[in-house]
Each structure stands twice: as C-alpha cells, then as structure tokens.
Amino acid sequence: IFESNPKVSKNIGIKKNISFFNKLLRGIQGDRVLCFNFNKKISPENFQKKLLNPMHLAELHSHHWSLNIKSQDIKNEICFSSDEEKKLEEKYSFLPEKFCIIQPNSKLSYNKNKQWKIVNFQKVVDGTRNLFWVQVGSKGETVLQNVINITGQTSLRELFFLVKKAHLTLSGEGLINHIAGAFDVSSYVVLSGSQHENLAKYSNSIFIKSNKCKFSTCWELDDCKVGEKPC
Image 1: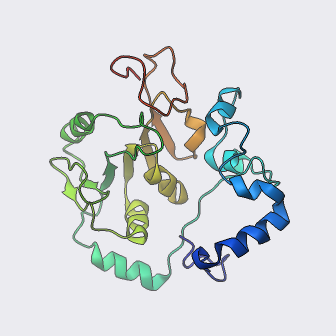
Image 2: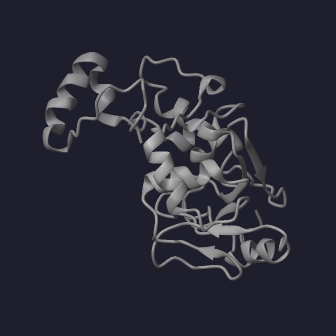
C-alpha cells in the first residue's frame, strides 16, 4: 500500500517481530494498543448506535488512541512511480479507454448483511450497455455476464491502478470504495441498512440505499432478522 509514497521511507515487515512492536506501541499508547480495533468495554457497533453523527471507519478505529482524527480530514493516499505506472498502462492496454469497475461480491466475514443480490448488479450491467464494465474480485466469486472478467487476475497494486483509471466504480461497502477515495473516482456504493454512510464516506462517494426498513442503520452484523432483508 505504501510503495512509492514519498512520506514513507521504508516498509518494515513486523510479523516476525510482532511482540516487540506491541511492546513499543504499548509504551507509547498504553494498553489501548492491545485492542486496536476498539476498546473492550463496548463494541464499535454499539458505540456508533449512540452517536447522532456516526464516525468514519478510520476515526472510529483510532478514537481511543490520542490521534484526534476527524472524518473531514481523512484522505486515502496511494502512489505509483512513473516506471510502475508505465508497466501497468502496457499490461492493461487491452481495456477500453473509458471503463467502469464493478465488484458485485461483498465480503461477509464481518457483516453478513452487506451483500446486494447478484441479480441486481446484473440488471445494472444489462441496463447500461453503453458502458464497458470490468469486473474485479477474487478467484471463484460469482461472475456477471456482459463484463470484462479479470477476477482473480490482479494483484493489490494492479487493482489500485485499475480503480485509478476507471470512469467510476460500483460495489458494496468495502475495499473498492476506499481505493476510489484515494483517486477521487466516482464511487457508487450500494449500502446495506445495517450501516451508516459516514462509516465509509469520502467526497467522491455516492451511496445507494433503501429506506424501506424501519430498523435501517441497525448496525446488525449477523443475519438480518427482518424477513427478506428489505433494506
């Protein structure tokens, strides 16, 4: 992620020395480092429920540290060297000059309610034949029809490049939206009613959500308890 970033002098892998870095960070920030995602007394979801204006993911995860991050200041940054960008331009020269990125498969290991039905993404593709859709994702995921399929064929850096070059992106809440935030690419996000848009909001984000469910923004992570998941 930090490759070619002028603000980062060196990437150091810490997997082999994780205990040392935990001790170092604990010395700087105290026991808060032991629960980086949030504090142990209350879950992030229950904390968000109590807020009139829910926090961005980065702001939320650093809330119990002494960083004072504010959502309006959050800007993702991904950099490329001129050589890397030239090589990627050549590798993906087969793509149309103007294309759109689509990722219809949501990662459900954290939130089981994020997935918009695949058939709905297919309807979008079928209804926009004037656009060239490039589907990204992992090997083995459901592939749409009438798209340029490169699922399972890109590295993380290559995905960054493709999003940077895209006319727009369409996905559920997740990685694609965060990458698009680094390049100000229009990011259309189908948002489940289990989440609030502030969680992943950037200036380029356009959220698509339903207000059919009275329990919308419930922060429910397990299977929806309302029949047919109306949101």
